[in-house]
Image 1 (cartoon, one colour):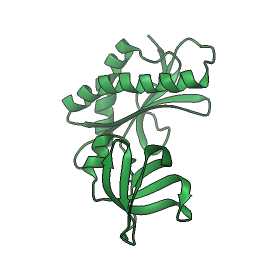
Image 2 (image 1 turned 90 degrees about the horizontal axis):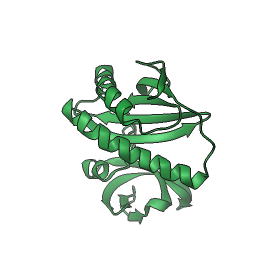
Image 3 (image 1 turned 120 degrees about the vertical axis):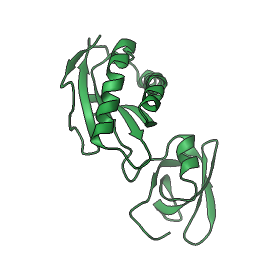
Image 4 (image 1 turned 180 degrees about the horizontal axis):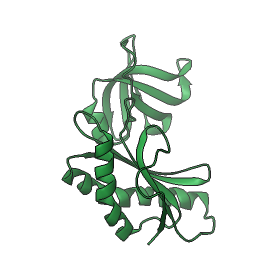
Length: 193
């Protein structure tokens, strides 16, 4: 089982309300493709663990991310519920997942666990995110410019097999495959369509 630093609440980033750092034995640096696959597997394993736990305490598991920022690894468990998430919800999820995560022990290296809300400009990643916010205003960030710009404010019109369809302000509808866009977030700050 990992050794822990900062067990309990931590404020690593304004959006992340709870956190702790876990330390374990050091590892040799694996190849980049192995790391990407490992991250994907870690996310899947943690999702399977966290989803029923979140449900059991009245929360929705929004997303799980395992990523490296600078020298540190972060396991981010993002939760949601009707009416929004507060610090008590993050604490409840942290407390509920603590022992099962220690028992499962899915991550070999040191990492920071952070429990958070998706935030106001929540990123749409999973199928149920798109279903829930169909017809909503979004910010679509493309990898390459389309009509001269990379960031488009538009309305979510459809999503199937990773292909997103959006309606631009001029009424035109365009579809983009997953490899064409880097992110899609709700656009709650702009009243224009």
